[in-house]
Image 1 (cartoon, rainbow, N blue to C red):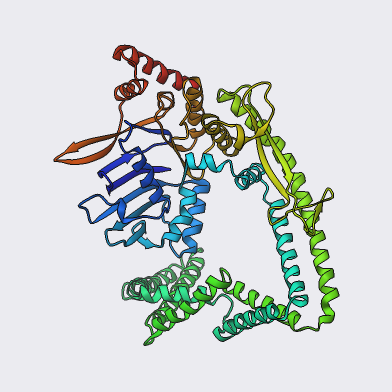
Image 2: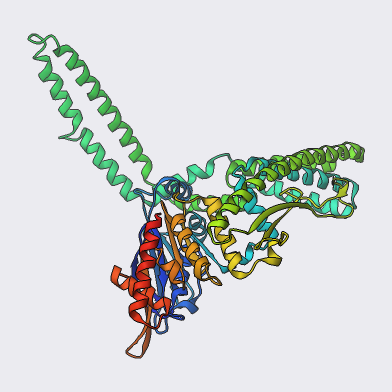
Length: 573
């Protein structure tokens, strides 16, 4: 959950600090007040690319920082990513800071530790998800419709099995084509594989060495701190006042009791064992101290070795084991390419076998998708009814796209196929009774598309369930109003229950459903435009909703605003 946001020198925002909370947080304001700047600042925290054009006129740099309170799956996901990067998360709080200088320099910090933008982008998926009208329009994409259907299934195994079968088919096909294809292509492939094999051989890669090297590098970089801690521990264990000396004295004292207390021999034995273990530990720590001091040039040698390994890792995998596995595959393929052309029949049989396995995997994926489609249709139907589209119909169609000369036939038709199977997923929609279902891209209006988008979010994420990431809705309610707007606001409130959701809106019906309400204000001071974000009190919130209603009588509009707020609170969430 995002607990606070601090923005300095972003466009017309000189400085603003906002404290968010759980549930639905809405941001409102006059048109042009700068609501989009809040979304821009959140996008920077999620890893979006930054430009010096965003820096406020007259300032040298902009700074955006956000504090996140983490728990559950969100905390585990962030810790795993930080562990992989060699960073530790001591407590369930993370502070993300972006700094963009006028020179174009872009710096990223996590809990004051400098990190790469790539790491922040990977973390951003677990921290913030920004959803706006661009995402609504992307919903019209066939690929996204297919991806959302697969997410609705909640079972990645059929998709992974299909993708694996496709890769195996492609590899078999490529081997066959190289053998039966022209000599030039075959020679080019052999040259590439020999280069890769030689590059890995020359590096002398050993499995797991990058882990040990990074650990040694970290120790040498922090040698002073490590040595100080080890020296302190040795002194505590084995110094003049150390525990080993104290335990030796305790043994002598306890032996004097052996004639008087039957339990004293047992105490003596325990004290002696503790003394020996204390001495052993001290010896181990002294030995480790001897390894702290670097040999001349050792750190440079480690850095140079890691540069070589990291270059290979970028090319061939995430670990040295992956590099070695790639080298084995290269070796096998070279043997195959060097083999006699008599292997043509064998390779052709491998292609046919791989295609048959792919056919089975894609058919299984299609069967699963048909079940997932029925489930998604039921959930969307229910959600759309709650979003003031009670007569709307929603269906998921699975189609096969014809592709001449394809080696794979589906229902007697040569079919286009790939890692995601053979299915072309088409969302179909009908907003009114008596109208037939048509592709969503051809029939839905802007307001209807916004509600379908929100219904999908709820169907896939669930109502009242804490989410891994804070959801940010950037005016997804555009193009709707009246009763539909009330329905959308209540759904957003329900979706936010148990988690956190931020929504930029221009609709009073949506704003009245919030758990916390913020207003973006634009003003002028000393000849400069300034934007600020302020949390509203209960009284101020009524005033703002009344302004958004735009009624001519302030008394009537305030009463109406109060009614909207009270009505939303009764809904729950």
